[in-house]
Length: 102
Picture 1 (cartoon, helix red, strand yellow):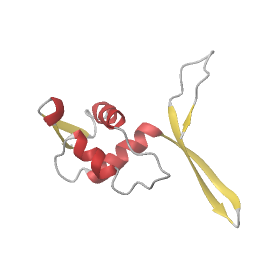
Picture 2 (cartoon, rainbow, N blue to C red; picture 1 turned 90 degrees about the vertical axis):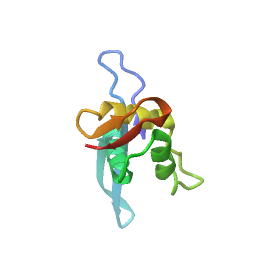
Picture 3 (cartoon, rainbow, N blue to C red; picture 1 turned 90 degrees about the horizontal axis):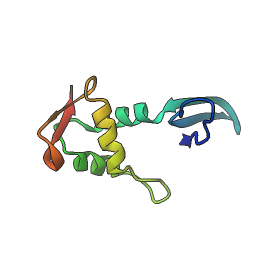
Picture 4 (spheres, one colour; picture 1 turned 30 degrees about the vertical axis):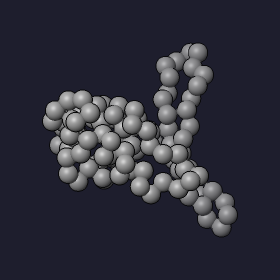
């Protein structure tokens, strides 16, 4: 993940994931994707039934290796709230709120 930290002449660019495909030990393609969009896609994959934020975080972190960074509750909560109009719906509020796909 890349985070643009210096932005004197323009707005912050946010966080991006960078992907690289390799062929014969050389980079073949390089692409970037908005971190929030990728995280929303990952959430949508695990949100097969209504879940709390904690349930979503636990499901996303099931396969995290020791050398990988685990998903954080704050990141998941923010992504769910940003995507509420288009991707996700919520029933209830607070810690017991249950999120589902729209």
